Image: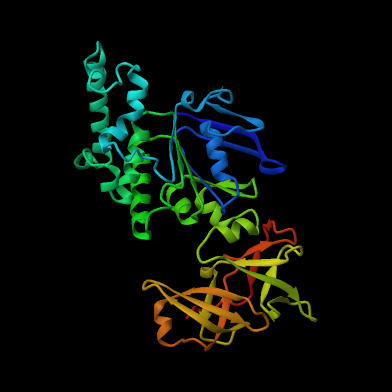
Length: 382
């Protein structure tokens, strides 16, 4: 397998810069997810790595060897496309075997009918069959080898596309939103399959997705892209709990993080949404508080933050309360125990408390600030 080094990559279409000096190091055997909203440049970057598009600045190397001047076929990288790109007239076996036939058989040996009988062809064909069947066994496709793509489910076609990449024994796997065409239930199943395949192969995976849930559950590290810029590259836990700025904080996490503007009342006390809260904090440059749904609690006693329940979501194991705070129109989302639904309904007024240990602080420029928050009183959560 291989270590990839992406250095200062630039890409433009006409006068529009798509990639703005991308720098990224991907370790040997690492599973890294390129995640971001549609149009941020992540698929373009993947196609540049694969050699399917030309970049206008910067360099790409594999194991310290520059590959910028190499064609896609010379880079020994396997790409799995969003559409799977299977040949509809070929069987599963034949689809998986295509890259091996192109690499190991000459033009004459690939001819139908007479090709297999030419000198040296049989040995290559036997080797190809063994490799294809081994890959099919790994991906649970043995019973489907004689079927054609039209006879397969979306998940089965996806596994065939992975199998075709697998037999090439590439230096790295490049996957461009391979699960986006599947239904929600199958996506969850295939996330597990791809992650377990990576674990078995110990291969380098570069995985593009706009689904932050896929990135969070599958990758060793996440590279968050927006507007052609890499905003943060870190572990899923770091990106979730310590985002570098509000854009990353808003994109990663479901439901989205609650952003609360802060101020000060006439007595100098900290206010959130115009309501005073008993917070002390160490940095006066803080302009906005970020609180994920689990950082807020509905409490039974009189608290400093008050709101009205506008919507409820019951997921069985947890519930989400959409609350309008007094003084602002924007809703916030609070995670709570489903048992609260027995006593709280839409339209009810509720008291809220913030956990200072989970609150994030952002400055006027949107960057996260390492401010320490404390609260001078603490009670049991309802």
